[in-house]
Image (cartoon, rainbow, N blue to C red; front, side, top):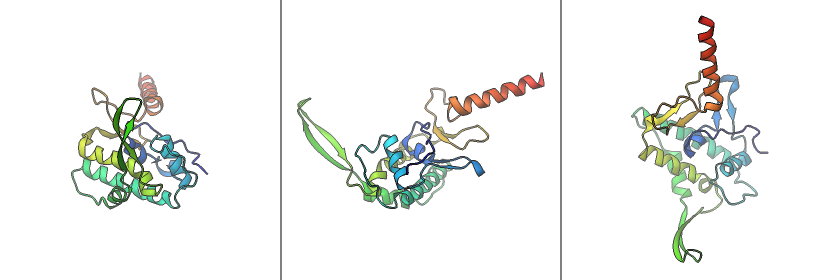
Length: 190
């Protein structure tokens, strides 16, 4: 059964969206990766799984959760300038690397590079998420990866605004709610 919780795709980065598959605090904690099918559903929603996956690899949810925790640790440690163990990420990188081939494309009369999943094993399915993390950790300014400033939100996002002053995971949810609360507080004091 696929997850009933709608995963937030607000981060402007595949790796951060994957980390955000668990969010909320205390009793409000939400888990989007509930079972093997929900992992496949998330990958399809993220547009990284184009092939139909009739039966997900058994236990992909366990690897996905372990990977998510390792990704979160690596991101936080990199932001703080300290080392962390990348063993789960490296495992997926090693076992899930894609196949690249060149193929003739008659519509454009040229060869083009095509990338295919190695197989339908857990590591191959999760490899695009890990690739996005590697790019984030090695090529992006990690100070632009921020946590929502709403007091009850723990979602992360990649601030790609021109001024780099984005404060909330989503203006539609947390931003409007926090601005309305600030307005009510100002109105109450006057």
